[in-house]
Length: 67
Figure (cartoon, rainbow, N blue to C red):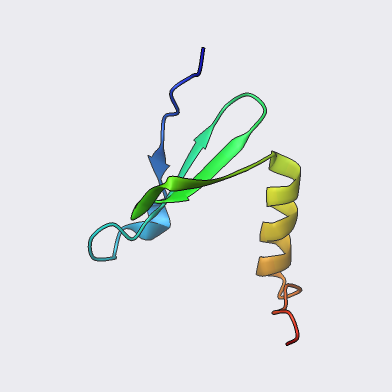
């Protein structure tokens, strides 16, 4: 049986027009992220890799790939 996800809108998404927000849902082992304008496209991850990504973004260590 597949569990229905309870999606929560990011508090940082309140100012945009239309469906321009990031939403998050979680299960005991997985975090699910999606954009409200494309709800069928989802990213699933676990807490550790997501925390590492956010840390690199906040500290400026994430760089764009070289072409």
